[in-house]
Length: 393
Image 1 (cartoon, rainbow, N blue to C red):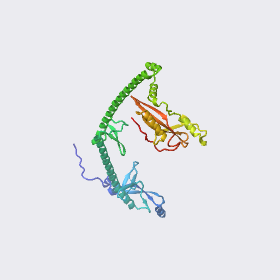
Image 2 (spheres, rainbow, N blue to C red; image 1 turned 180 degrees about the vertical axis):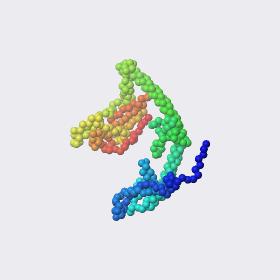
Image 3 (cartoon, rainbow, N blue to C red; image 1 turned 135 degrees about the vertical axis):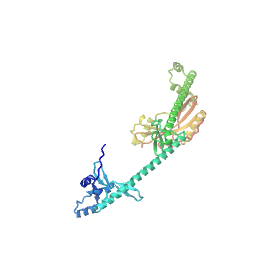
Image 4 (tube, rainbow, N blue to C red; image 1 turned 45 degrees about the vertical axis):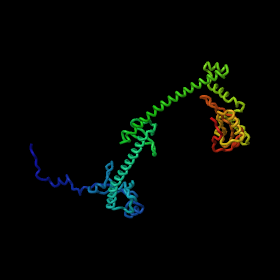
């Protein structure tokens, strides 16, 4: 193989064209800045255009290329925008605007501003990196503590919507719901989704078993009711009822109503509480000239029923009379307030009743009887009703 040795440099002109000195290399850069009103006046006095936004093209040597940025279009810009400054707490803040001058700046002024921006830009990004790191660490500690609490407390459950899976679940925290994912979490936080899924599936199995148990109890109770009804109809029913019972077509509600009649036969002479509130309220409203033509239908009637907080002498005597007749019954004085849905400001009507309840086997039999007039007065407001009359089991 032949070896070629170059014994001397080429012509001076060739060397100069191939590798120009660093000091001779310049880059055309656009500098953009703002002029205040004073600066615009000064610009006009100096023969400038006096515009608020000023652009000038300068030649920047390679020694100062760190003060230059090049956008995606290949345009070289002096680092005047965005601006970086320190606030009162020495934090670096960013402003998306070029600097503003009260007089046209010199080239050194622009270089000085670009150099300050270059220096503070690095501090700004370091500051943001530190903040993000601190935020991630705080979030990691928060998630780890939340996961530890969940794992150590077997009574805690993940949100059921969406349902926990072996890989993802949501826990509830003070700041809202928090997602745990085995693909992104670390440490104990990765153990939360599988454990939450196990607890979720265990709850489903337990709920299914409980529902089956309750269903079995309800079926057993229903069969017991059917048996007692059959026995009662056989002993106390009419021939026609016994015939329908034998054919299996006697409604249970009819049989229970017959049993209720027998259970309250000792007070059967007491007037029953009638469910004729619409007619009563209409008659009550028409006593006022303003509502002389009022028409109250069942759909317009609102009935609020609660236990009475007080009783008149006549009402208490009725309660005592019923209690003596049925010692095993529960006696409650009730207050029914009737209002007109179409006009909430219309007068209300208060009606009293006495609810008598007896337990006969699996059946709870109820009857409500009319009571003397209200202790509150017709239409008189009442904040809350509570049980004050005695009940006997």
